[in-house]
Length: 350
Image: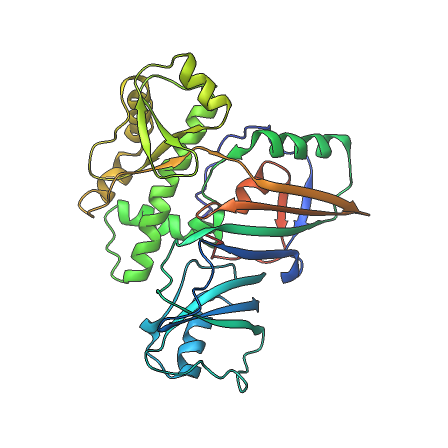
């Protein structure tokens, strides 16, 4: 078997010195969607609020389509959730001119329908405000070092790395992408898509790691592309003046990094030079991504957990926080402890 290809990307709060057991049971990792909007109460779609344990999202969607006797394309969701976990999420089912579905005979081990409400539009991937995480870390002793690290993470955030789930179990998706970069054809559409996502994620993580290594993670440089807090609006900071520094300190704006695309990066000056220095080391990856009609995108390099709380019970840490859609709880855990997972999972909460 090939070795795990994931680099040891740089830490911001220092590499953790302690380890913890994670996911010894599915309930140790609980994920609850935070929807963009509440159900409208009318329309041809039905929003099904569902709790599942040890089931992946795509499988549940297939079972809903089968039970309701609708095409699979009529069932959608905003994000895939981890299989080995207890998760709560919405599924939307398009059922024009039909009465509300009857779930009295629904039987799927590990799945429970919590509610079903009409809605006026289909759920689409990414149509989420975020996810709430409730995490249990076991075989861990309380210490001042850990409590201080938790406090720093709550106040300062963590690098917004793509989590290991994006790269597949043992880095399998990334290995596939690297083989694709070496010229191996991948004909399976789903596997090809996962490989492409893993390659883009690696380039982004490499970029964050390089800024950390250079001491420029929090330090803005000329030409950085800034994201307005709570929006998808961006602008280029051609010079770093006192106003830019003030807005960064007040978290009104955030420094972003590149998600590879064929069009030119908006980064300029020092920021463009830094991006190019990362990409030049990954020429085969960049060339493999060319010609795939990928659009240049931006992603904040810092992740701030919201409503972060924790408490200790003997040798167990109970930790909870919320993250925006597309961000990974494992990026937070990575800065806290070395995780020994009781179960591997190829999906993510996004």
